[in-house]
Picture 1 (tube, rainbow, N blue to C red):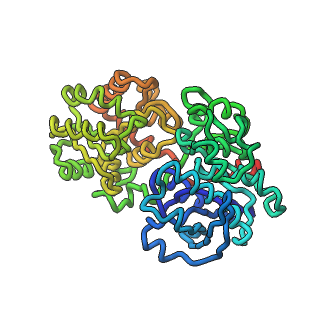
Picture 2: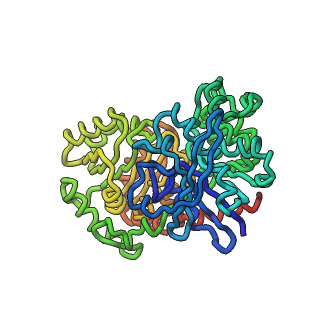
Picture 3: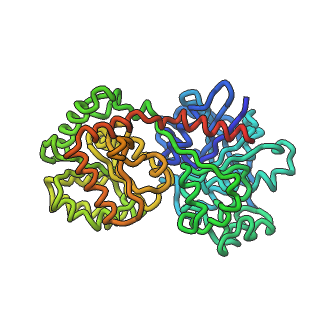
Length: 479
């Protein structure tokens, strides 16, 4: 049996700030347990919910040498849905109100965490064949493993997989400061290793020293090799392209299941999708204060309200769309102040057409996925994206820009061949997005049978975690 250790800064259900936690906490449950023993290690944050802290039991303790310091490390353990979680305990680093503070504090915090993970292995009675690292916070693990820790025979032969969830975030800081923090030798801070544009770069270290690199979709694996998508590391990604793979993230199909979802008003499946969505739509219109009108197309947006998610495109055309089109829009999320205020303004100006919910609620999110006819994701870039998968799971038709995982998962509707599960546009252009919206609306109002076919095809697609796990298993076999 192969032993795999997931190393991550967050994982559901213990701690979550974004999609990384969904991947790191969900994926290990779906490996073939007759062939793979997959466990997870992450920091023990003080801001974790008490109900999870109460389930932790003490495992072991030791000290970590970080630069000139010797820091305590405790290992706690728990088991959730058959998966073992180890947590690294150190109140100096992990006692804050949030998992992440600022880049200055975090570069030391995650240097400590990286060494603590490697130092913990002899204490765990679990020597992994593969360490699967996630994002820049774990970028130093392959560096330490392939350099400093090779002095100890215990670590010989351990392989590394490094998954990049978003290449924009790299863990960059002042070169000399990182040398002092990490205790790594001067020879590693060169342009072919840890140095990048005059700074130290944790993500780059992980890319250089890992055996295999993955991203969270095939298209994003290509985009990070281009000047437009590489965030300054495209040359390195091209150099490592033989070891670079893209695997689309999955969904927890037990949590996102319109047939059993306890958060929505009416449950439904593919066989009674139309009636189920109609009832949920009416209920959501009542809750949001929108006119109860089954015939009006309802468009959902659940997202961080940021430039990356394409809201500057939305800002350019929203007044025109609401002023001219027969449409209702349900927005849920927080983010940049200008976009929050934009939606508040248009909710005031078009109160019968737009509901702006400037907060986040899991329950409201599920209701939007289940109730809306269409779902808009015009992202500037999107390494994978989960909202389009959630919307299709609930029979809500996605309208997306062709980038990253959105391109890989949403096949554009073809009216003549009756294929596709959504609508898409290629260029990052507001008029092109608006044109695609109008095309979708024409299909909804004038070709309703076609629209229902698009929604039904989306519901039948398989983007479960089991599908993703099989792809990762193939990569592990390569090692």
